[in-house]
Image (cartoon, rainbow, N blue to C red; front, top):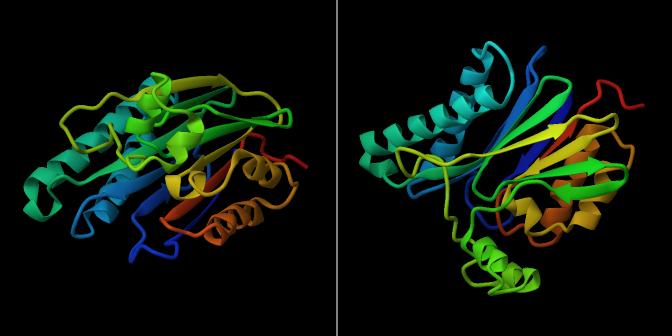
Amino acid sequence: MRVYAYSDVGKVRPINEDSYYLPQPGERFCAVADGMGGHNAGEIASALAISTFSEAMRGARRLGSAAIHEAVLRANQAVYLESMRDDRKSGMGTTFTGLCSDKKTLYIAHVGDSRAYLVRNGAIMRVTMDHTLVEEMVMQGLITVREAKTHPKRNYITRALGTSETVDVDLIQLECRPGDALLLCTDGLSNCVDERRMLEAMTSGQDGERIVHSLVQAALDAGGHDNITAMAVFTEEDRR
């Protein structure tokens, strides 16, 4: 598994509250997170979630659905306890999308509106569901997908790590096929870059570093209204 990531503060926000984890040699897991909260606490929440998750995954006896689920629950607990300990961090939280692989299966754990997309056979498909008010409204048929993109409450997140003592984690399991790739990203990318452009970048044949840089640049060119993080995951060790 080869993983590349790039993050940018964007053109509006004063600090970057996104965090991510790239696998170290021999590791087969990664994650992105987008923090929220006052007094720069969003930055703390996402970084704490990522560090707690990675530590738990390194200690897992076997990679799989149970391991990644437990790691995300530990991350939630760490952020929640820190928010309770320090009044300046009260109410902080973070989105979280993590992935691990045992070479045969991909396991994704998801909370919030940072997304995971699967690129397979020349097509792209979103595999996570946003935990947002507008996503729920779309699912209920109250608004259209197009209306959701400009809805005044489109940034209302209904589920995040650290905002309560417990959290429901979406778990997704995918068979790993030759040539598969995944894109993990925060909403600073998905709100500005459409799936057609994502697919073009992910299937361009460019080096992974250039792919993630080009995606972030596309979001900047579209306004860069939020922090932007793109992570490209190639399941094969060498795709050339």
